[in-house]
Image (cartoon, rainbow, N blue to C red):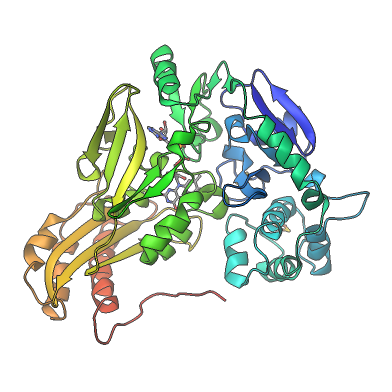
Length: 478
Ligand SMILES: Cc1cc2nc3c(=O)[nH]c(=O)nc-3n(C[C@H](O)[C@H](O)[C@H](O)COP(=O)(O)OP(=O)(O)OC[C@H]3O[C@@H](n4cnc5c(N)ncnc54)[C@H](O)[C@@H]3O)c2cc1C
Ligand code: FES
Ligand code: FES
């Protein structure tokens, strides 16, 4: 059974196609056609819906935007599904809708319901957001005619007030209802939702051809773009043991099924220099669903997190329900989209060593757009110094080979050299320019990739001098 609230109405689904998206459910089965379909690929935000769920950090609700075109029904279990039709009350526009009218934030109106839902989630989340917070909240929404200034102004104005709407008034009652959905079997016969590792192992044994699905931001494209049929899927959405985030003296351990946005506070606490890369990973609604486990397990050569995890020497905890084993990420990728995962295994946790005092970390993402774009090249460098001498250089790169890769030759050439010595720039650039044989594709040519990789080493060197450090990035768009 999949149980949720459609606004305030309780819904129980005993059957649903495994590949049914929230968008098709809401438009075709509930006839709520305010939510639009633009790209069906998570790229435009016309389909944005909000899922409200018990907040793990407080006793209230957390309002999460999702791209409903690539979100499966398993994501809605135990949550309140809110669409644009639910916002107005007694024929009076919701404050975010009124703000968009007052600031002239809509012309043809196609993108408007999606923007409204992103504004609505921010209205409930962040008292008095600044312009960067607003840009982050709207990062998954495209508008082709109004221009963004009126929409940003409307969002800043309405979110300056404390939330005062039917949702805040009903919060206690909504929370009580949602918590009551936690009991009983979850999922449907072909969208299986195990709740512990034994049940997950059993589901995999019973359905050897069923694919695992976590945030579905990658997998769903098989259904919406390639029009494949997903007969049976095993969702990790109810696996609370895969959604934890713990730390000890030496490392942080993140559950493979925890959405990236939920892991971000911990990641940024221990690795603050990842801020730019993480906030440029797709868009907020994608990060609200996409998991680190999915990013690693899909073994894409252009994923943004494997380079980070390579440079940080992360360990992957694999499980089959009976045995667990730990594989260093440096040994995990065995070929294009190939990994060490056995057919009965899943990725359970990712363990990341903390930085030591003399270590520096930097991540660079090169893509055509700031937001919601896949990297042409991603480069991550971790440097260990002792009294200004290079002790170790660890790396992770995306977009330059068939798998995420490292460059050991860089460390071999640089260890023992004085970091501030300018010869480190030329040496590193020369090695990186010739280290890989990337391909030409729509994102970038092979020549561009090689050149940019070498130049990123130069930027890393400039940014990390003890004296005379040079800032090479745009740090605010305010
Ligand atoms: C618009 C858009 C923008 C994007 N931008 C970026 C970007 O900037 N950077 C980037 O790196 N990626 C990006 N992506 C790709 C995608 O969002 C990420 O790869 C994401 O981390 C996938 O996680 P998921 O939980 O959604 O995976 P899913 O789609 O649920 O699964 C992906 C694959 O991993 C497998 N899998 C998932 N979890 C596990 C597990 N625990 N154990 C074993 N196998 C598992 C699934 O079976 C499936 O084969 C983007 C995608 C979209 C649609
Ligand atoms: S329709 Fe474009 S993001 Fe969903
Ligand atoms: S108002 Fe037309 S696309 Fe935004």
